[in-house]
Length: 253
Length: 114
Image (cartoon, rainbow over all chains, first blue to last red; front, side):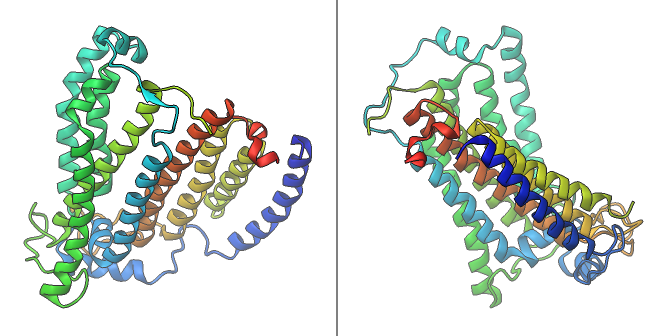
């Protein structure tokens, strides 16, 4: 199929689809005129029932905790997929260990960028941990904080020290962290089943709203998810960076 | 302008689809897919918005304040995570396609042409 035929076909299909889409969207309530029920119910009882002030986290890790389990394993599975797709093919081999000078050339990092990168790493890690553990109080939680935490070691790469990054965040340790996070979240659910009788039912004391240790299982679940997300992203990052920096040779079919 | 957010969502969806169809580079096609997915964020957040309501964070507002629907916000969070995983998988496939065919142009993927 040529490019022109493809675009013409798309034009016809998109016009038809656009009409149906507009018709469907026209049936929605006007913007700002909220018709739902669950939103008001949860806004009304969330703080009293869960002692959490960020209701998004309360839904994510408690009220809809079971859905998040599925979401978490999608992340886990897709990172496994990335590792599998980017595995070492026949005909490919790792480049011999490079000199540090070559690494710097690849990343193109100046001395000033390197110094700044190393200086911001502690700040990035502190913000990441803050976001993970304060999920039940203010916007944040395991997913958001986990991504920030994964950015820490990535800054070592920006500083032109990719091979050093592999020392800071060794693959085995990162993979164990990812798996432990996934398992930890599943264990939160199972503990609810064993100790409170229902899968993902809160089994920890709720504490006082607004305090760091409040919201029952939210903090535990958030920490497990933060560990899993940062591990998952680091595994994916290093798989892609390996392709650019470490792997050489072309695959034979 | 009560329909503006939905119009933006429809536009994002269609412009992203056009990006996928017209791409001569797999990376551009993958990024266009993320544009399509971002249409769903706009729809979800638009559906949950209620006029004059605040964010569903009761850290510094009274518990009785009117707030928007937090459920759709959680769905958007899920959506973002799924988008990141899908993008990672597709980029990995693009890396392998480049290795095998020496090109990122979808037209050059011989296995598809045969």
